[in-house]
Amino acid sequence: MHAFTIKILETLLLAGVLSGLFSSSAKAQNCDCDLTIYCCSQWGYCGNGYDYCGPGCQAGPCETSCEGTGTLTVSDIVTQEFLDGITSQASADCAGNGFYSRSAFLEAASSFPDFGTTCTDDDRKREIAAYFAHVTHETGHFCYIEEINGQAYNYCQESQEYPCNPNKKYFGRGPLQLSWNYNYIPAGQDIGFDGLNDPDIVARDPVISFKTSLWFWMKRGVHNAIISGQGFGATIRIINGGLECDGGNPAQMMARVEYYKSYCAHLGVSPGNDLTCLTRTLAFSK
Image (cartoon, rainbow, N blue to C red):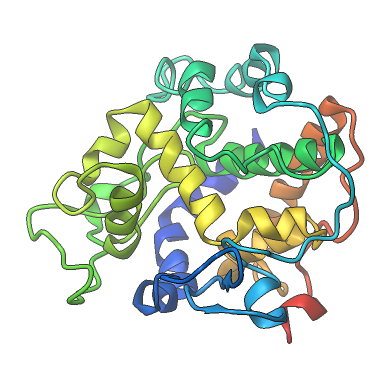
């Protein structure tokens, strides 16, 4: 299981990478505007045009390249067979066994109505394949609930908006290894848990755990990146581009790509173009 070895190296660094990618968003506005008119940019600012409605757009009339609508639901695509095909590859003694379940995932997904339900059926399948590719890579086939050696790290960046509880640690937890106080606190505010004082609930409650990963997916622009036709490589850049993209670590990058291609094949959909992030694309250089 070569990807498992990759995961061990990645997990130790993931939270720091997310800090570099998203510390700006934690300090930005919260899109307190009319989202029927304006777009909420990836950094939380309201406006119109490419910078607001393009890559990373969180809400509002975001730009997409898909045409048409589909009929498949998330539960249609994420069957028990599909999920079992991922979890069955984890070791029997994994902490995630019995924690991550299809029912918990579907309950969490119901709180994010745009996830896996946007555009055509093929677009929906590609988004779900992309999500599970990253989750598989981050958790070792749903083996990990918490970051490896997470207790050794605090991941607190002091700020007035997102203060830290000195008795708590904000290391990676859940399917996408949510990390840092400025992710836990707003995630908790949006989802409905105490991210400041009880970050551990992400490792105790499987529904909340899945919700944090979907919150990150939707809030940080990953959803829009895959739906707008930027390709799977754009999702890697958002999630872990600081380490893996632009030649940083091609092996880790390609592990994600292979999972994505495998899941697309299982779901009977083409993976599309721009699967890697070896070089910075035009969409991210504007």
